[in-house]
Length: 580
Image (tube, rainbow, N blue to C red; front, side, top):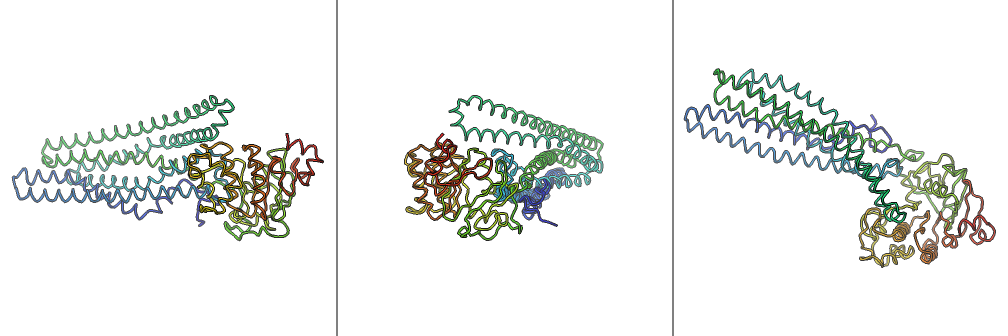
């Protein structure tokens, strides 16, 4: 049987997500179940012992019996208190650790080098799955012992009532299964609506995240009111789904309460009639009524557990979709997820593209010798984006090959490719933390005078942080929204340079930077990357002026290959693109 690891290799089901979550902590769940069952059994014995005290001590006036049975009652309380304390601790440990494990599992799939899990999902939706849905599934480790303990309480209560009176015991034994069946039936709509609620809430969160990240642009375009209305519409949809799910849960719990109340009223009525005709003693009646009142808790617990199980199944389905998402690229022809690092110093070419077809790329051929600084100019921006995505292995090309250090990247594991070739996307995001945390994300090197400092200087990020209140230690909000566009670009560029990969592809790294700073970056970039292979996907004349060579793409193919100076002199179309 193939093990399903949730990396897109095999279909992961909601049931598998739930089972693996419970199986990983079955020891703690089992311990919690035993202890919580002990607690509930002890709770069920309380009214039974009170009845015994009444019949054997109070009614007879026997002080010795009173002391003995009160000690037994005290021991029962000590046992149930101990059992609950340590049982709840085991259950909560299993819950919290399963939550962390599920979030890690989802994150591992999202960070898998082959990609694909994030396709078609907004960041807010992914966050909702990794946080809210993971928590709902992990809570199964708490509710399973709790529900088992409630069931144990029902059994003990039924046995006790059978000993007190056969009719009362049979009433419990025969009445509980139909009651639980009713609870299960009523809970099914809640499961369906819970999934819709989470999905719409995730969409609203995703819309909000996108709007916040682009707030500066939206304000500049005067699109603030339209963006606010877009979020309001998404929020109203999420609110409607939440209200429908809440109404379903309220109806579910109300039905459970009504069914429980009617059931317990019947028990109390039957017990009272039996006491009147002398079939049971006063102590038995007190025990029966006490047990009837006690049963409210276990029955409610089973009802709530049913609701939580329904919500967990819906959330597990959403997690399973992430874990089962097909990879955007394959693991390499030998099927490995890790492998030897390619040699980018191969004399043939550090980077080569042969017959590449994807989107607007139509049989693109390109060679970049080791140590060369190459400019790639694409009048069609989608062609540059398609090339960047193929080189980053975010997508698999329709045809053709990409060779790195003389080896096809489809023969290598994605991890091996990315350790050698880094593509810094045009819209590269910054992470929550400080500016320095972002720059050192790949290296962790924070020492003064280190390569990190040199990278920040090359990207002129050192100049950018001078204007920040705490310099390089200034906190950065999610996706860098607290920084200006130029500051974000320079920090992102510094991060890419600090990683110091053998082959670096930069896609429009200076579009938000002023002309003077851009010229400084261009000169420093060439010096910083000396001896390393670098590809600039750009139409910036300042950057192209420092390249060794420039190729021009039209209709998905190379139509010109010369120096920037030669192209500016001889190619009118090129001159119009880079100066226009």
